[in-house]
Amino acid sequence: MLPTPSTPSSSTLQEERLLVSELLSYAVEGSEYMTKRPGWDGRSSFFVFKTNSFPAGFVPRVQSHLKRRGYQVQIVRKPRPDPLGEVMPLVDEFGHSDERYSYQMDTVHKLVKFGMGIAQVATGGGKSRIARLAYARVKRKTLFLTTRGSLMYQFRDDCVQSFGESEVGIVGDSEWDADKPLVCGMVQTLAQRLTVHSADHMIESHLLRQQEREKKELDQLKARLAKKKVPMGQRKKEIEALTKDQIARRVPDGKLLVDIESKIKKQIQQRKETIELLRSFEFVIAEEAHEAGGNSYFDVMTACVNAHYRLALTATPFMRGDAESNMRLMGCSGGIMIKITEKQLIDLGILATPVFLTLPTERPKSLFKGSSYDKAYRVGIVENEWRNKRIVAECIRMSRYGLTSMILVQRVNHGNALKDYLTKIGMRVRFIKGSDDQDARKHALKQLATGEINVLIGTNILDVGVDVPSVGFIALAGGGKAEVANRQRIGRGLRAKKSGPNICFVLDFVDEHNKHLKEHAIQRKAIITKTPGFARIFCHLVKFGIHRTTASNV
Image (cartoon, rainbow, N blue to C red; front, side):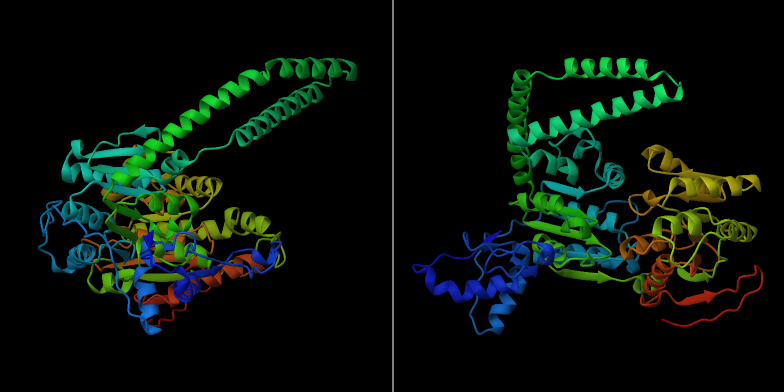
């Protein structure tokens, strides 16, 4: 937070305070459904009247606004400490010889100049390398912050190769190694350690868990007795016996209070240690920074009060559904200081040119326009035999040209079904999902890169945090509408090809036989048509092997 300078008479600042408060205000999501207190219009603000303060990321915005209103604005802040690393640091054998990647060091130079900002870099633009270059340049106590364990471990591994194991620690996933110069941290772990629950809250949570556990035990017993057709009299006796046993196993009130007091003391100590740790960081790198709109991410970033340098990395900033979340990102990271689009990366040859194939589908007999979304997704996507076989057919066709394929699904049973189809016809295929550990994911990706397998199927764990090799074909098998996720999925396979035409085929479906699926398909197509660099859209007729092609430069 950046305090507003105090003056002898606070009343003289009232107009300026109101101006800043209005500028940093937003409509509270769901306020139309809330019981409004008298005088509240459903809006809130990041400006705090009590302390005359607001998040530092808004400084340029506030400064510009006040200047436009005729005010003279002077910013008073502590001098930002100089970076301690080399001006052009080396983090790998790649070096700085390839001018196509000059934007990566440009980002670092802008960070040093401005102190904070968002690097909007399209998927495939090397955000992890930018983060390592930035750390090597600043060379001060650094926190790499993410919400995903896969990203945390991937970045840790990359940094160990660049800087050595003694320089990199992890805070998250049951690990606490915070004494290293570079700490890779999980938002969830840090946010949880910042929280101290009241005794009433902990008692209520304990009683709710106890109630749920006892109900589950009773339901399971009743189901077993019914299955065995036990006489009603015997059932009653066994249920009564279980109920008595449950009561006997409950924690006595006195012990419960002692346990809760002990937990609160532990939480208070953990909070103190976590605040001290977050205050020790002079540089924060926010990976997948579009998620900083969430409460936990924002709270952790706000606690890093001595982070003179802040670098937010994301391909999709300010795309959250509510104004408050988007403003939180700016509040803790500042505005966009550099933007590298898909088109720029494609024109530079860093990414392959995607060629999109959008296919209409045959309607399953039990799918209708008005079917509920759950039924439509199950019948129209997961269990849609025509759709799944078409994906398989395209994988076969690509393999005949020596191209590997990646199929992205949202549900495990969908991935299993596609794997069964492909295995039966002799394709070499792996399916990785959330239950697979990091080593299993890396091994599967290596198999794809070496050609040991033809096809890799993955759930949304492939959206971020994995180093996907170059592929010739991506099937967006899982549908959906989220713009952030779909941009990530498309970008996963666009790594430049080492030989042959630098293109990647991307398959999607129209899914026009249900109103929900059709709406999602329209939104996915809009992402393609409005993104410069996604050059051509191919529309096929239903029958395999017969197609009409329309191409348009976007």
